[in-house]
Length: 137
Image (cartoon, rainbow, N blue to C red):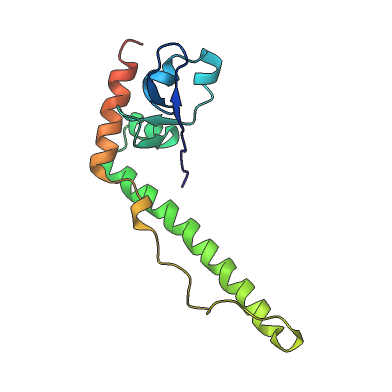
């Protein structure tokens, strides 16, 4: 999962506020900067979607297939990180007698963050948004 962080900027000429990841601001940038963007934002810039996911939708996968694929990829990543956490926890625990102590319990690893999986509604909205954004081309 990726996070997109923007800032609330203010134009020195017209004094309007805008988010740096909003579509209208991004369209005002030079084309070489626009093409480096790895995500697409919605109308207000609040939600985004990685272009890798958009390409899956463009290639003909259904929204349900993309949702399941995204969840599978995120689950795989989550389980790999959890295994690495447990392995490191066990290493530290094995050295308990020589001054190393774990600062948490072995089973304190957080639950799978289901909110990172893009839902069908969001995928559909972003796919339609992508269509309208690229229709002239």
